Image 1: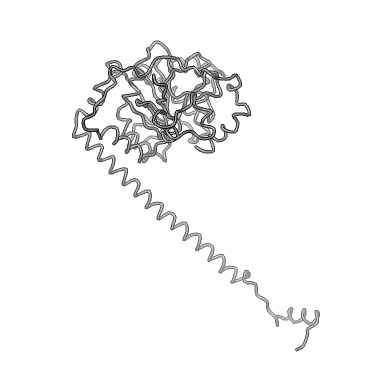
Image 2: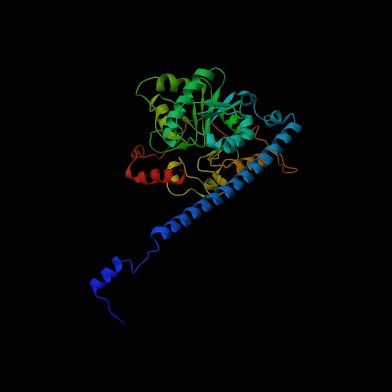
Length: 379
């Protein structure tokens, strides 16, 4: 067998007598590109088709449940009247405007679920959106969607509510579109307070300000006097309150603190919470991580965690919203009937954090980790 020298090899190669083909050159490279491109398109099509089927199935289920509840209400023309029959006269007559923060992507799922369940028990329910909706009663606020603009959205909403509805309602309840409110219990709680005193009431977080601030997700209520004050003495005074940012509940809480509006307690006479900002399961089985530093008082794990007259559950899916609605309003236990008509449940006391240390007002290193944890878990 002849052995080629380097020079002979070079001459043969240059004269194309020897050809070495790479699988990633010319036509072979094109073939690989085509295979990759087709594989990518197949994956995308597969995902879109099955995702669409999942969404269709979910929307179909929610539509069936909605129709069931609506038919039930139609058969019982006294449905809403019966629900409030045990409420005291003052609570029954309170005019409550509920305004739920939502985005256009949630209109057909979360917002519709609120509209078909607990939202029917508000005196008036509006959804705060950047665009109108043909299926829901919306209030348009010109703010870019996204967590970074939550304070802007809430401030502009409170300004519109003050201009438009300040004389029409006694209370204004703010919440997200993933919360379930037991409106009868909320009415009973709010009836404890006088209209002449500004009231800011919800679940109290203990950090960042001297008196704490209220969870925006679980919802908080302000009366007409508080709405007037935060506009006239807060937003209308340049530089007094933050009007943009992502920490809506904190910014609103700081603003109320600056103008002297106090937080009032939502803890019942047994020391149990009635607003659950991290969801019912976290309240029942115990909070995790940084959550324990936010709540104003420790939760007792198990049935003792929560008031039997709970007002608010946060982080509720549309499916869970219909389920809670069904369990609370369409099932009964034969032979058992109880009412709290003559029982003291809530008080009109100010919410004070008894064991609050001075360094809890600021975001000290001790709290930085759970501040970051909060947004990483619930982003």
